[in-house]
Length: 166
View 1 (cartoon, rainbow, N blue to C red):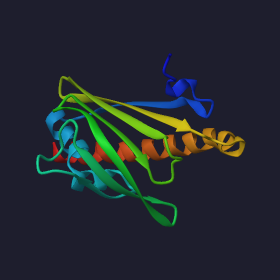
View 2: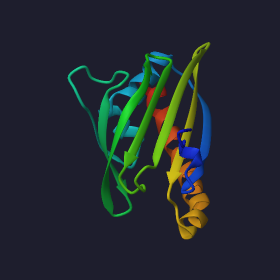
View 3: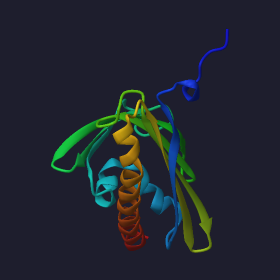
View 4: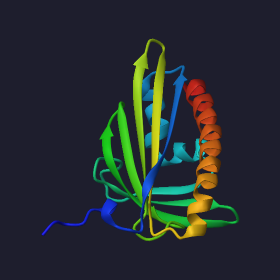
């Protein structure tokens, strides 16, 4: 008997993906700090209230985390896992909960590549949505557009902070 995959689930919707690439005038290690350290994350991720890594090892592959995010007038909690932690080249996380439907998740992948006196940062964000009703499916493209606009603003702030530090 064949196991049903997530894609076979009639309530599953094809992942919605956003990609961003920017060049930051600093070395990868300086930029990495802003991606990896929760207190520095709050400086450029405007909606992030807190991010706590579980365990004593700190950020590493397999570590869990809980983040609180401001969504409009309320603060929502998400759980997640660091799925890749290759300092200072590749960081990937997956998170779920909060205002997402059960079974849905977001994957975010950060790749840093040195280019002379700059670092190229490529970010991929993918929403894996499950069980969306008709109304939610209609609103999803608008939500993704608003997410892209927020991400662009956050990346501009990240660039400014990392270049000032480097």
